[in-house]
Length: 134
Ligand SMILES: [Zn+2]
Ligand SMILES: [Zn+2]
Ligand SMILES: [Zn+2]
Image (cartoon, rainbow, N blue to C red):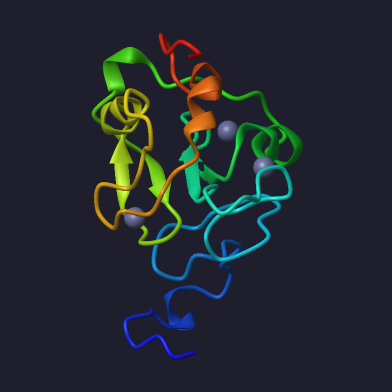
C-alpha cells in the first residue's frame, strides 16, 4: 500500500499515535484509525481530545488508564473548539458538530462519510459538560 499524501517521519521522532495524517493519538490504540483495546468495531474510528491535557485518546477508558490524571469535561462555553478526530480522514470536528451527529440515526464523518459508532452518544457525558446520554 502506498500513501503519497502521507507525511514523513521528519515531522517528529516521537509519534506515539498511529494516525500519520493527523494529530497524535495517545493510549493503547490497535490500528491507524484510532481503534483501541476497548472499542474496536468497524465504526470505532473517532478519537476524543481531552480538555485536561489537550491530547487525543481513542476513548475515556484509554485516558483513564494511561493519562495519569482525571479527565476534565469540555465546558459548554467551548463547544466551538475542535475536540473530535475522525480516524479515517483526520478531520477534526468541533464539540457542537460532533454532538449534532448524535441526533441522527447513522452518524458519519462530515468530511469523508466514514460511519461512526452510534453507541458513542451514550458516553457523551463522559467528555462534554451538559451532554446527556441517549
Ligand atoms: Zn487528560
Ligand atoms: Zn480505549
Ligand atoms: Zn472522516
